[in-house]
Each structure stands twice: as C-alpha cells, then as structure tokens.
Length: 275
Image (tube, rainbow, N blue to C red):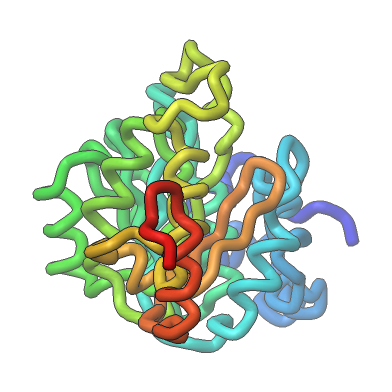
C-alpha cells in the first residue's frame, strides 16, 4: 500500500486527528471516505500505522510489535491514553505523529499528550494536548481529574531518569488495576549526559527502578524481618522488558509465601541462631 501521508503533506496528517484529517481530505476533493476505507487504513496493525504517520516508534525503534501484543485487547475500548512527550522538541508545529497513530489504533479512546512545549496545534477530535512538566504532581493530578485515570500511559518524555522515576512515583498510584504503563528509551539509564550512569548498580537510574519492580514481584519471599511492602510491590502485576522499552502491568500482587518455609530459610541467614 502506498503512503497516504506522503501525498498529504499540506494537511499534515501526522498532526491531525483522524476526524479532522478525513474532513480536510474530503474538502480538498482528493479522496472519499470509501476510498480511504478501501485502502485499509483503519485495519492496519500498529506498525503499519506508525509507518503511515511517521512516528519513530517503528523505524528508529521497534516498539510497535510489543505495544500491539500488550494493548490489542483495548482496541475497541473507551478509555484515556496519556502519552508524555508529543515530539518535535521546541520546533513550531512539529510532533504529534504518535498521538495520531494511537487515535487510529484506539478509535474510541481519548488521547492526551503532555509536553513542556505548547503543542496545541495537534488538538482536535479525540486528541488533546496539555502543557506542563511530567514531574509536576499538580499537572498530572489535573489530567487525571479532567480526563479520568489513564488506562494506558506511555512515557516518551524527557528520558531523564530523575523525571521518569518522579513521574512513575506520582502517576502509577493514580491508575486503575489493569492499567498498562510503558517507559520508552531506557537506554538513557547508561548515559551520563542524560542523567544516567555508567555504573549499572547506580540506584538512581531508570533501570534501577525497573529492577526494583521486578524484585518487588517476589516481595512475599523476602527474608527481611519486618519488611513493609511498598505500593509498587503490592500493585505491580508484571514487568515486561524489551530493548529500550519496559511495559508494566498494574494489578494486585498480594501473594503470601509459605510461612514455614520462610522460617526455615531464615535459619540460614548470617548470624542466625543455630540449634
């Protein structure tokens, strides 16, 4: 299938919601709704939509097959998707390609983009932009209050570990069970210029957060006397790690270890009394 967007640069499909894009195409007399439908745009998988609208979630990265696998079940649902980072940096009227991709993939979802730059040119149909910092608790709380708690969060923001960790700490507790929380471009964990560290044991990086979440899945097995599970320990149901992408599922994690086994294992800790 030839690229539609290559022939509609003037109307900038990547920055229009699907409703406005259709309307612009119809007004220009270039295509009818039936013709667009015949091209199968609505039936494309997420990778096809990423190619069509020019988002780097496919191309520079290979994220879309992972998203397809973990989000396909929501394709017909009504919910709010929040993407942190609209793209285009501070360049005028650039960015928004992935918001348009999401709006096509989730035809009933409300799509919200958060960016530190004004990207209001993307607004229309089911797409809305918000200006603010991803680490500002008031901004995140206002999005939840106005749009409802997101069922999908995609952190494609600053990519700085301190911002990623702050956003997760603020936003994750506000999400419902069943929510999916994605963190992109985790490679910056290893890059000092982006706030990461060459020390892979540095506890302040994004990947240190991810490793803690994975440990937390097994918190019931910890031998620490008096260990108090964190919110994440009890509400992260799964952590899926891919190259530069982490997908976290929210749900109840209140499994209990067998008490007798824990007591027996504690006998082997250094300094434990012997019989």
